[in-house]
Length: 111
Length: 112
Image (cartoon, rainbow over the protein chains, first blue to last red):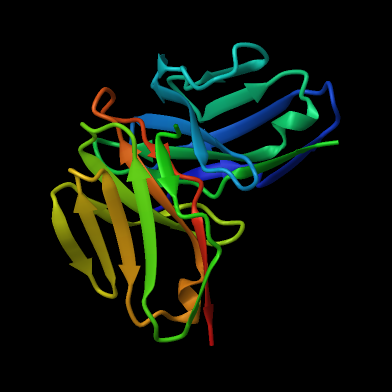
């Protein structure tokens, strides 16, 4: 009974490169959420997706960030032209009309 | 004003003592409140949810909610070293039934 699966666990990118973070929700869950956690700060909502639909992206930066949840395959959070300020832990959560269940996160380091 | 604020910590308590964590929220009509525990380098894990005024107990954990004061707390009785973690308060605003607003967290260290 796998939980929310995220990969990679750690990702190092140089400034200007692209970062792709993947998330597979818990079995039976059709709702995916991405949160970002900066050091000494709480989790900040970024985006909420259902299959093939972005429901709420009010927490996403207007540029360089995008997310998708295709009909088949994991949800992808994509960050283009990364900058040092993008270094953070990115958590994916899933639910099915229930409290959120979080994955172990991807720790992105931009050098 | 932040949507959810927690006492800043860190909080250090001796083993066996009670750890008391506080959280206030700004949106008066919020209805759902959660406490998550996050070990260093790990994912947040839901440990308590509370929806009505009063106390809710689950093992050594007690959540207390006072909507009039916009205040929710978590008590950890008989604290154990394994309780050492960061505790995140989360509030679900009434306008979105899916989005949680998190506090910055309070780090608890239980001294053996």
